[in-house]
Image (tube, rainbow, N blue to C red; front, side, top):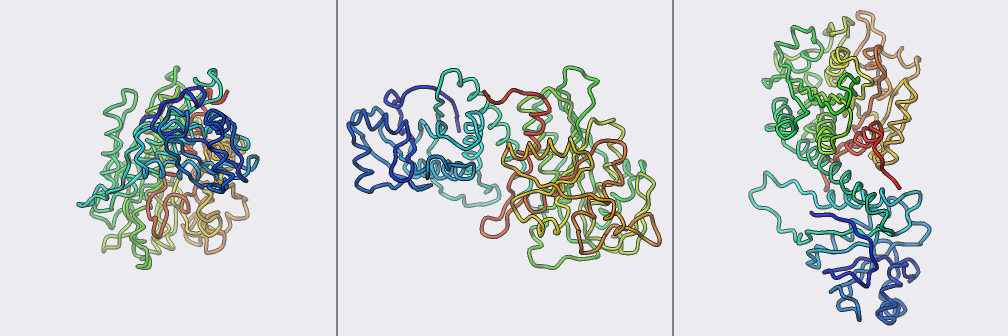
Length: 502
């Protein structure tokens, strides 16, 4: 899909289709009024006749409107003028793209980016339109022998901005939107891949593909022998039951002007399949445990977007690849593991494995002397119970970092909600035989999991994103969502100080 911006009046647009808004009840937007004027009341007459009420998502396609140069005009219902919010705007864009494809339009000029969306500027409206369009067109059919025959003729979309001085803003919004969309696309592709293909080595291969086209990105991997030499016994224990070797992939991006600038480190849990191990999961929906590498998919997608935008930062992305399977060689409940940090952990449940992988990685990253570390993981079902599918759980003992991530989530629409990390919760992890257990019980499960991780992050500012509820959808629309790529990418854009709005 090709995107561009222009600034001009609708009567001068010669295109396959012009897209304009209509408010409820039957009120023309400013742009629609201009078209109505040159068509000598043609559009307003249709509205008076009741052809379109203006409710959100309603569509009316007009052919050969008098005195209008474009072949067609698509009227889009936008609801009440002062009540158009972010959620409705995204829904309207999605419905518009679907309608344009259904009607066979190959190109269109979209004036919806001139609508008033509460609290949002031109940059946001254009970028969100790009991302929403790309996401609505996403389809994972790489492994189907018979591809669907979905009609998608739309190839070019032009967004109109109110003034010429906003053209630069619009162009920047398209650039950022395309980068985020590319990152989300990769995240979704990798996460949707079946576990017999997407194993820890596959994650590494996807990272190398990005590096092949990016001069300032290097990729290295650590296999089991190297991790054993480092004392990463907790990480290795989780993967011991699988014939697929555990692989930790390190993606090092150098974009800062000052090469000595401390890096931002992103860590992604990469359980390419989580059976639960000896503490075997129930059979229902176990196929979805291929998504237990959603954190790593989010990190690789974010690194893709970062490389495309070439942000002036130093960033390290780590994909903690592993597979948790039952076998005679698997780790057991009752085992006591010595982590890379030297702390010992009593295993109460082998299905609480993500934290055992991450704790060693969080110790490993100390060698980078990071500015900050953010880990992202499909860590706990408890987070899904607490927050559902709408918000990721955010945990951090560092208020400035937590606020930056929350703000990035609000900006990008990929929201998070901060959860407590009070010392009282640490008591749930006490063990009579080791320094801690790997499970804190049913109560406050997402919090005690984050408390466990916090014990390995004392040497830097750290935040944890639990994306168990947001990384994928179940049911009829089963598949990766591409989250938390928008949140993490927006966080990096903000850290880079890149100008965004007017």
